[in-house]
Amino acid sequence: MPSTQSPSVSNRLLSALPCKDRERLLANCEQVELIFTEVLYRAGELIPHVYLPTGSVISLMMSIKDNIGLEIGLVGDEGILGITLILGVEVAPFDALVQGPGAALRITVPSFLRELEQSPALQLELNRYLFVSMRQVAQTAACNRFHVVEERLARLLLMTQDRTHADSFHITHVFLAYILGVRRVGITKAAHSLQQQKLIRYQRGNITILDRAGLEAASCRCYRTDKETYEHILGDAAE
Image (cartoon, rainbow, N blue to C red; front, side, top):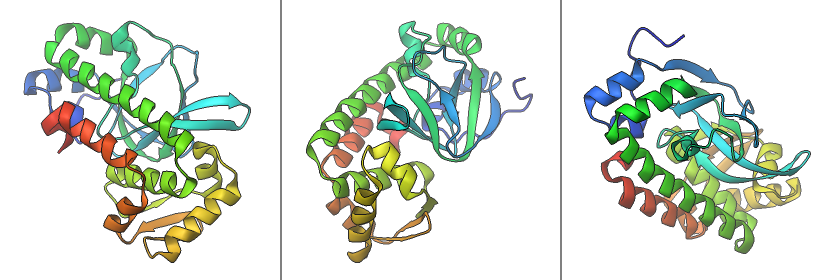
């Protein structure tokens, strides 16, 4: 059941809404804790809930076959999981699994659609976010094709830091290899190179970013392009 108390807002899409619209949506949300590698959606299945991460990070995955997939998007406190519902599509286009455990707000699909009907401000904000999400998916597809593993890893670490708001987080070689669609040895080499450059510290799945500016320089241009797109389209919501 939805919470009877208004949870604190630490999702930037929600924060951008007018107070009345935000409070009405929050009244229908419940707070949940997402668990590392928890599967929230399966591609082709009905979307059960909409998630607004407040302290968690969710990977959007395109599965090719058993245990082989590729991350094509990332959702944190800047966004929402279930955005395709605004197109009238209730089937998940991608797998969604938790990359970074933590808190999220969850709302049932009927309640979300009802709030969407009643709030032009919510419709506008989500239409803009849909564009940003489409741009991110396209950018990631190009990045996966043309950029080397080290650049892609640097980009992913920066995107994760942006959404966790922490210099340190836990993510294993096995999981990184899975979401980047490469062999584990490729992740090991890339992480070792970044560590040798004193950009990160990596030990037993615990990553600490030591030099953010240096990591941005080591990343491909795709990271900056994603961020500029979000800031340009969503404005103050990106702050």
